[in-house]
Image (cartoon, rainbow, N blue to C red; front, side):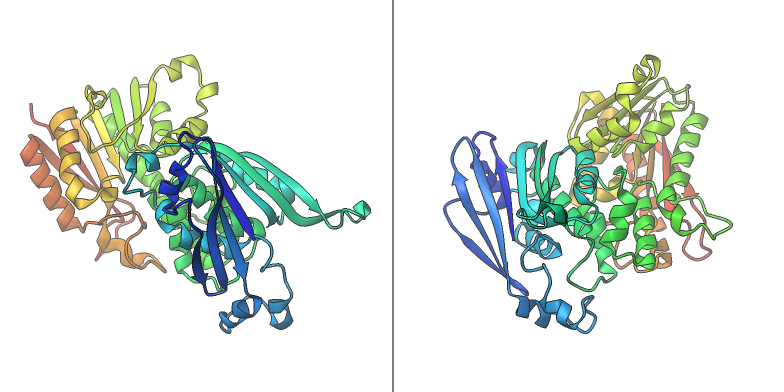
Length: 462
């Protein structure tokens, strides 16, 4: 099976830095089911193409499976997995390009943060849903998707099309985002995996889907296919997505029609608590620092008293998704005049952060490396200095209530505070920068472990 990634950025050979694979060498990587090779069919200043070729050993594939294999006896040997792109290719891509998927490039860090003109080609891809499904999955992510059905036999057109498509994607995206799209969506299109689906698949999905799965119109289909329609894992995934601000209620609805009463998702409770607090504080101008896909922005726009609303995020993809979800192109002029979106890093001084009644850090601080937290504090509390700052963050003590959760709630969390730790951080920050702080729990409280989310409201001393 074969996948190629091309770029025409200048110099195009920078693709080698991003993939951490030198264009002048063929590199091999052993997999439990075969061998993956990376090579460059073309590499010059104007165009560079990296190819990932996976050679699958069908016998090794069968032997690498345990008793829990999803296939049956002869079906393990006689199938399309050694030949057509599938979860095998996704696993190899995840392993071979692990550093690139994480968005790291130590030699050229600025490259990893920027979008590149990319073209990705996969000659043979199983697609249960045909070319239309491929377009429905890739186009909302900013890709121009060319998906052509492969006929069963070109000599007998009356036989119709096979279940395979030839896929070509074109777009300007971060390479890390492009690789994560493929890592999730290849097995989703195939609608099958070559290995047993365990609870850790939820972590993989949340990690690879960060920044785009939330707003995807087919997020329910993606989640269910990726997790093999295992209901317990689906519900865990939807709950985990809610922790990072993704909508889950409509995704859960088809599976819980029998439930007479449905609890309000935590992300909804958190958003409502923040908006309510901003109203009580009398804020008229609000900046959402780390706005993600724009859910809080949408809620603020629905309240006329917020005359000036700004969303900031370090991810340009997140801002693009936010603009799409907020329907900026169709927004009435009066509402559009109240809104500003821009890209920015919260650990660097930016004069655009200043001049607001209130700033919101909703589920943001836990994504900052602890050594960089002091820089965020200095930028927000010391330099931007809004009258009020609202901070929400997970309560680590509550995590024992989440089924299948091992470790932290999200793979990108650098830490999660207990109630005591959050109180200590907030009190120290308030004292250092001349604020006072109060605390409010969000969500249903557990008698022993408290509420799932903790909120601190900082008010500047005048």
